[in-house]
Amino acid sequence: MRKIWLLFAQAVTISLAVLFVLNLFRPAARNPVVAVQEMVAPAVPAANNPSSYSAAVQRAMPAVVNIYTSKELRSRHPLLNDPVFRRYFGDQFDLPQRTSSLGSGVIASPQGYILTNHHVVESADEIEIALGDGRSAAAKLVGSDPDTDLAVLKIDLPNVPAVAFGQSEQLQVGDVVLAIGNPFGVGQTVTMGIVSALGRSHLGINTFEDFIQTDAAINPGNSGGALVDVHGSLIGINSAIYSRSGGSLGIGFAIPTSIARQVMEQIIRHGSVIRGWIGVEGQDLTPDLAASFQLKEAKGVLIAGVLRGGPADRAGIRPGDVLLEIDGQSVPDSGAMLNRIASLQPGQSARFKILRNQRETSAEVEIGRRPKTQPTD
Image (cartoon, rainbow, N blue to C red; front, side, top):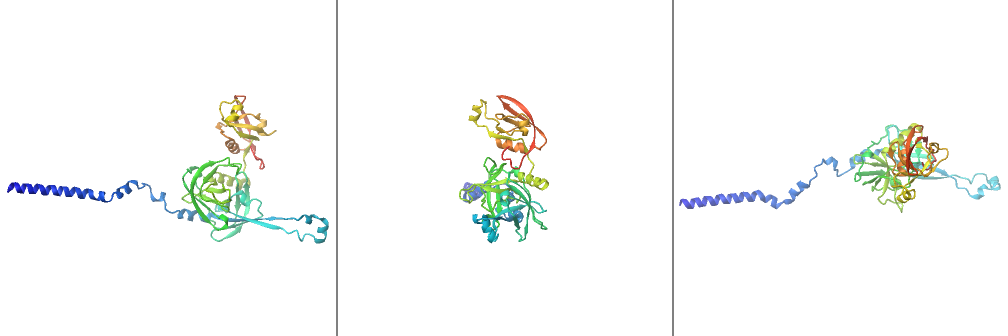
């Protein structure tokens, strides 16, 4: 009897142990997805991974304005130049015609300064600004810079909403961006995309190019509008699109705020942008071109032309020289040379390291002021 009781007790103990083990592992076997979700859940704050960008839009959109421009055109029939015809009919048929266009802009300061594109307000006789709150005002052109396609306007209205400037230098490819403007005149519109590339140049759009490329839809009418980050801070001024049809193909370009802010401050302070200039024409040094000059490597910029009597000519720089460095900074291509020279202050001297007849030498160049109509440097 005692043996039977002992066997019964051992069987009960073993059964309880088996039930305990099954209950312990059964939830994981029934629902393995829960464990996977916990493992792959991003360990970042929700604010850094938003499901909506409405807060950024609400912060930036009030500072984005619509710009309406008009200019007078005179269409003259050849008969109007006939002195006999004008003697009898005078100027009553010589009536002016007007053309209008639209674009976008960004209120950059509480004082009413507005950043936009030069091509939006180029040759305009009248400029009208419409704010998002329903107010409108005539704007005056403070100044423009065709070389970067930027312009600064001024309106006199109280309590204008100004945008917050972001740090375009901290952008990375893949960052989410929002484009705000007035495409095709339909009204303020927001599109979303990412930063597709940085430092785009050699596009033939402007003289000085350092574009942010984005796939956020930018269409006609968006020019001069805002490119903002997910916090609603301004990181670029929408400028151009790559398109064969006139519509967005997912390749848009914006001028970084690092450039736009410098241009705006110089225009407000001086009425124009002051840049350095030495009077040379540079050409990118390709491997074939380097071989023709018997150079060991394609490094630097070939000086293809020198303006007679200009700063470079007075310093002894000649066509055929290869520019290697400016004040110790390398110049890998003609775009870098152009930007580096433009950043120098007129009147100061800079040391140019050049390669001539396969021998390195240097020249001290007194920087001049870039003429407004000068297409190359």
